[in-house]
Length: 80
Length: 281
Image 1 (tube, each protein chain N blue to C red):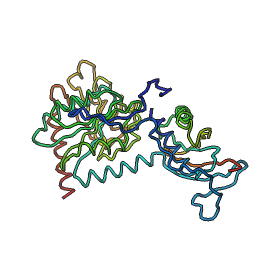
Image 2 (tube, rainbow over the protein chains, first blue to last red; image 1 turned 60 degrees about the vertical axis):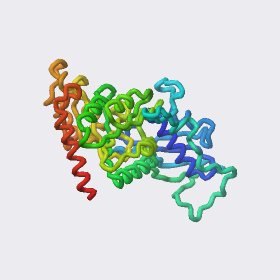
Image 3 (cartoon, rainbow over the protein chains, first blue to last red; image 1 turned 180 degrees about the horizontal axis):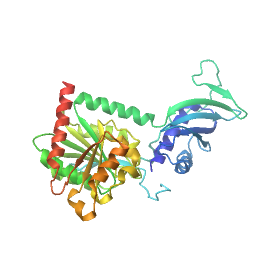
C-alpha cells in the first residue's frame, strides 16, 4: 500500500507551503509511468489528513507525462 | 487500519529487530507524521518576496509548485548513497515477488562467500523476523525491518538499520526488499544497484508483466533452475523477455538449492567488490 505513504508526503508538502493559510485543493500531476493508483491515493488522502491541518482539503489530479509525480498546484480558500 | 488491503493494526508501525539481541525498535508509528508548521495564527498574505508564483483564480489564490512527492525519500537515499560510498560499502537492493527464493539465495551466498567477503543483510518483510533469523544462522549479521502495512522499504528505514548494523568497509550490504514487483521500483534506498530475482516456477513472462521493475534493475538472477524441466521453463524466452524491457540487464541463472550457477554469481559479486575497491582507491 504505498499510496498511504505518498498521501502522507503530499499532506506534508501542502502544510509546508500553506504557511497557515487555508487550502481548498492540492493538485498533483501523475504520469502514466508513475505507478500511482489515483483511486487508492484519493482514499488514503482522506484517511491520512483526518484531524490534521489539511483535513477537508480536496485532492485534485492533473495529467502529466512519463513518471512525473509532483505536487503541481495549491489552491487556497478565497478568504485565506 | 489500512482499508484497502484490510490489514489490521499495528499495520502502520514500522519496526526494526536485531535477531542477535532480540531488541525491537520502533522506527515509525501511526502518529509519527509531524506537522512541521504548526502555526497558531495565519500569516498575512504577502506578495513581495513570495517564492512561489501564484495567480488569483475565480476561487482563491493558486500557487504553482513542482515539488517531487518522493523528494524526502530521495534526499535520504542520496545521503545513504554518500555514506555507503564514503564507508566503502556496496549496497544491493534485491527485489522480487514473494517466494522467488531471495532469502535462500542469500543464505547460500553467505555460506559460499565466507572468508572472501563480509556480507550483512537488511531484511524487509511486513511481519515476522523469520528471514533475519535464517540469515543469522547462515553466518551473517542481519537486521529485520517489519513494514507493517508497507509494501516496500524506504530510505529512512535503511538509514536506521545501517546505523544499527554499522557495516565495515568492504562489506556487501544486501537489502532484501519486501516481496513485491511493483512499489519497490519507485523508492530509491541509496543502493548501488537493484537486482531482481525471479524463479523458474513463476513463468517466463514476469519481466513483461512488471516492466517498471525490470527496467529499474541492473542484474536479473533466475533462480530455481533445478526445477526448470519440471515446470517447462523456457530459459531462452525468459532471457528475451528480460532484454526486451531492459537491453542492458545482466542475467545469471542459478539454483540456490543445488548450488548450480552459484560459483558464477559469487564470482560476479567478488568482482563487483574489486571494481568498487579500485574505483574508491
